[in-house]
Image (tube, rainbow, N blue to C red; front, side, top):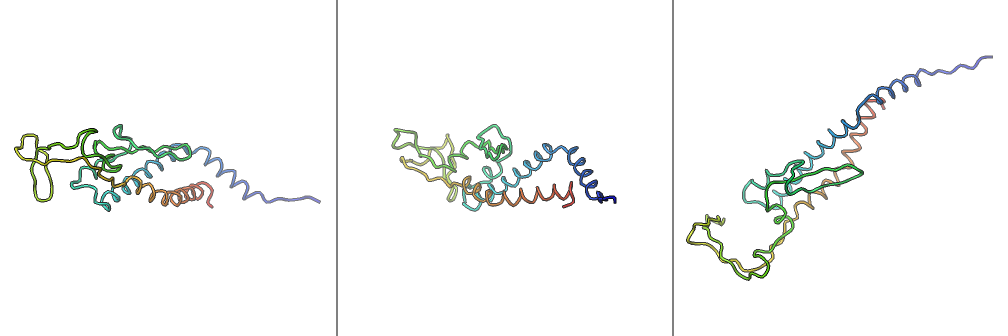
Length: 170
């Protein structure tokens, strides 16, 4: 008496394993992380707008991936996402700052008012006197991270499922 096995499904599984083994997962993961970076930049921009941080679009448009200036990093499970801005005051607007340097109680800043907005002008004969005080930060960065931390697991699960579907038809 002979025992017979149907290995048709097993052969298909081995074939799919071979297809997955030829795939460059590192390249796909890099592309996925770049996409997540773009998603995170959109969240940062949304938080800047929602919190009313800027009076012009300079800060809003300044964030990019891999910027060597003013870099913030998100590290998770051996993967790093770097986001930066070339706007020097971005961290001050996020974290808060003192109006004057340490030890300076008052200082004159030359400029003029245009409606509700003060425009710095070093050649102006007018200006404003700033007394030392703390300006609270908007904490848009931390807000964006909290939102992104809620989005990340779902995005990762969807990507993993798409890889499983692609290579194993699950």
